[in-house]
Image 1 (tube, chains in turn yellow, orange):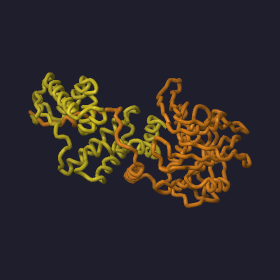
Image 2 (tube, one colour; image 1 turned 90 degrees about the vertical axis):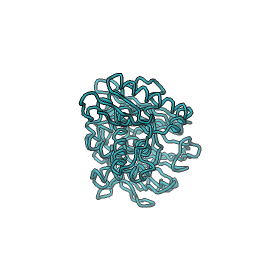
Image 3 (cartoon, chains in turn cyan, red; image 1 turned 90 degrees about the horizontal axis):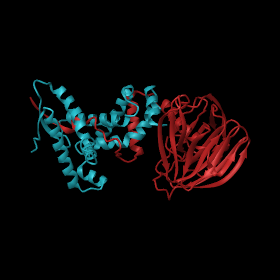
Image 4 (cartoon, helix red, strand yellow; image 1 turned 30 degrees about the vertical axis):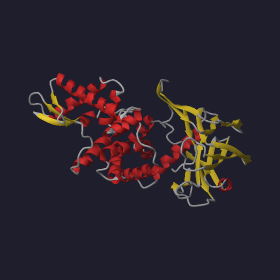
Length: 186
Length: 279
């Protein structure tokens, strides 16, 4: 049974279909949650974030586009994992992803974040490949540079260079559109 | 106003969809499944087992057409084809809309396929059969039986590299639906039992490229060509034990249409595998 059919069955309240999706996506979500939560939190905490992601699917299946199940689950799992870290006041896993952004005028922070998310998506599109994939692997999937390098057959230094260029491109993209932007790590 | 924002927080819409992560861990998946079902308040076992067993049954039905060097068995309206293969065996899941346009198409490859089953016959499937066991070598640990003991899927999931038996009943699905048995498959025996064609097979998984939970599995396939029913008894138990189970099955029409029949009307081509599995 394909995912489209399974999602339709989940929308109809079929727990068997949900079990099938759990079987398919548990390894993927567990890897994402582990990238974010380990070693700060335990295996049980990681499994909790994964199971909560599937519960969210059960509760919100009608909002999931049939061909977007995988990114939807991944995004939810990322949020669950980050929430778990924050609720215990633990540090975020990546040490290279802070940006300092000056919003124009009196724009509210929530609006600013929404605007920047849209711009970030556009900016990553301009990176080309494999730079775009490397950027997504690191900042979406939270993969470490060594792991990305191994999977893509590169050396880690090359991956770090491409990530740095990606961050520079992102800052430039924001700046060109009126958002003052600096890297507080520099 | 200047705020600090994490790039990762801005990346929610940037999932690299083609990237695969993680490796299969059935124990982990079972724990997650149990946790999710508890959280959503799913009734203890029955709905999940019913759904799972039926899903498996559908795969089973999809499996029975291309066996044994193109042997075909038919008495009534259905034919079962068994075709030997030395892997890989590829196939597709194709779903069409009512107007014939392709909704989805996904290719699957089974690199270790040893035998392929498929069926010919009426497009409309029969009601699902159900069975009652009068002999089991050990207690079933998975599946659902009604108050009188009737079931469409039962298994002893065993532990470690042992899955003693799995019994699945389905109405066959004629057309471009095929099922794979992996490993090096050997035909051990064929027989006819009062309207049922019996095929006994054994498969060795030790040279498979993919990891399996067991080294060897045995199969007893009961095919009723008149009704279009297939009963699969498979597992790591000895073939004689599985045959004993098969001989003491009571089988009847459940009166129920194939599970999810309506939802699956658009599926014109499928492929699956019917090797023993835990639930």
